[in-house]
Image (cartoon, rainbow, N blue to C red; front, side):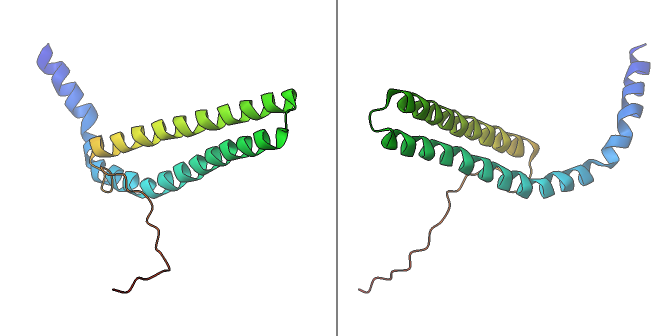
Length: 118
């Protein structure tokens, strides 16, 4: 009975094995798109946070406006935290599946226009 079950599972899954390399290619191509989307949403969440701080400064003692600004700041913090967790989950999945490019998070590199002479 078990041999029939095992044979059935193997025959059912064998067509998917032929597409394993194509699946890896698809996942690799989606990596760039996912990275750009995460960066965009993280930037939006950070801008919401900064906008809340600007509104808090501009509230000038008005309790209602201060309350609204604090709510915006809170949602900005929640957005940044959630996007950070999603980025971590995506990185984990990339490493787990062995997708090239996964495994390290590198901060953006800024090039200084100034040069120093010794």
